Length: 583
Image (cartoon, rainbow, N blue to C red; front, side):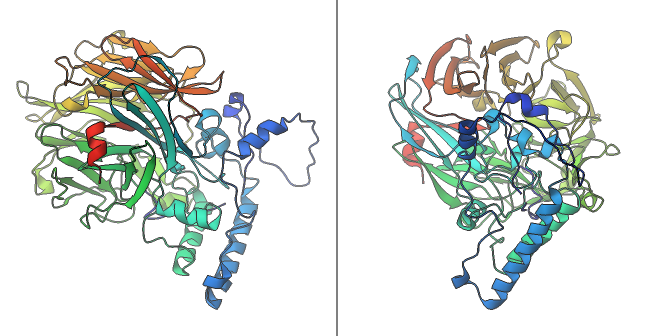
């Protein structure tokens, strides 16, 4: 999700927690010449199952290169680089990891990976799937192919897409890795060699990993010129193509087969028009059918660019947006006529690695601001920048124009501490659903919490009716992140009154993003449609897809899935006519 990989990674296997109670565990830094004796009861079967979650490495040592394909210089370079990596791994063994980079925390429980699953048909359905639902619900997520050998953040995992195809009330399921350039190369080598942007690029060891990565590239041991991204975050269907993306690379084109399986077509550059990464949340205007996007760079200027694509995939000229510091921009918003650009306080300072810190930092001296730019703008000077102090929205749910007040209204979840997803903090994370009003005449911004009675609930990851994106909306459907980071249900929030209705999964069931699918006829009411939620029962260790009536919040159908589905990120729905038209 973060692009230090216009920059990149490597490292030694860690042990794994067996229960959810281990989520708060921090490793103890061992001192030399101290012998610790203890009695441990181990469930060998459980350990074996945990190991099978990952693709086995071909060797316990750094990558094995095919000697028949390497010249003498490359063979010598491979030996030297592998030796240097072994030294680095050895020195890291006694270094404690923060929770935000400890794989025992980041991918424990139902955050742990699963293997690919071929199509499983005729799944058990409890209730009745509405007749208007005909197509495939696909959801992206992070699913590391190999067991991490050093630090690992949830966002670092390889992209895996889960597909539930629904036809005439019956359902099938499949999940597949997105075959990115890095995954294909690492699978060939038998272990991870590309750096992990969040989990590994910390301090001096992060600098060393970058040096090893670039050395392998220079010596021709790997190819780092065709992308380094994981494509694990967003999904969008545009111009007859299903695209998977994260902001560290170009998108990857996928295809849903008529049987409900998934195929990776390849890295997609819009027929040679795109040569930079796209953020994970491009915006598809429901009226014009244009796709709007930002692209940020953490190494060189311009740190931020805006562009859009016509409905038939023709790219506009890029508009360079001047920023003083490379900034983390995971999401943005559009209105009918404008683009809303967040320039917030989580920034990239690569120099921090030299002093042993994370390059993703909270800049307390920077003032957050929002840029309002007309969609047809040709110069950065046309952007209206308005300060909005202490505002950090990882996601923006919608925005619209209010002509009567000369304002742009922005709806987002304001997160504090702003960098708590990336760096370990003592304060508890809060994500407050907020309304930000930007006055275009006075160039001032106001912000308020939306929920009535200031109800203390974390609302993150969700959406509005996508047919009304960029226009005034009444409802938002957002995950209830409680206990953080688990999702115990979702909220239907009336944005005009602040009233909230909850749908709770119950028991030990937790989910992820509530995806809203508009009703088959478009619906006269904004909430005419259905919510799709992947739900996992941590007690029974079973997964299911729930389909809930968005108007009444009543469960319509439950599709029992044949294997565990990890908690993930964002999804979309490709209807049956679009499945036929895929390229």
